Image (cartoon, rainbow, N blue to C red; front, side, top):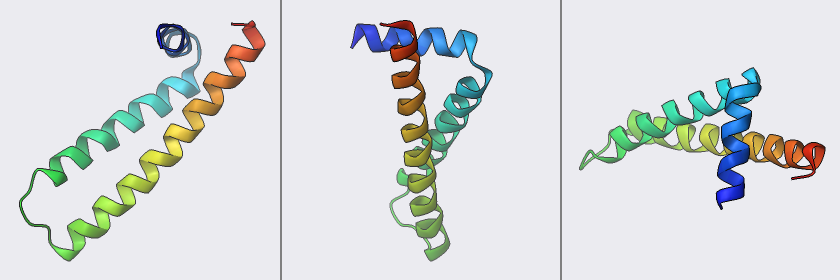
Length: 76
C-alpha cells in the first residue's frame, strides 16, 4: 500500500488532471458523508446519494486507471 500511496502523491504533484479528479472525488465523498449522517432521507436526498455514489465510483475508476498507467510508464 505504501507504494500506491507514493504513486498517488507523485500524481497529485505532477498531473493536473489527476489532481482535479482527486479533489472532485474528495468533494463527492464529503457530500455523501454529510447526507449519510441524516437519520432519514427525502426522496430527493436518496437520489442525490445514489448519484454521488455513482459519480464517486466513476472517479475512483479513473484514478485507478491513471495510477496503473503511471506505474507502468515509470516501471514502479
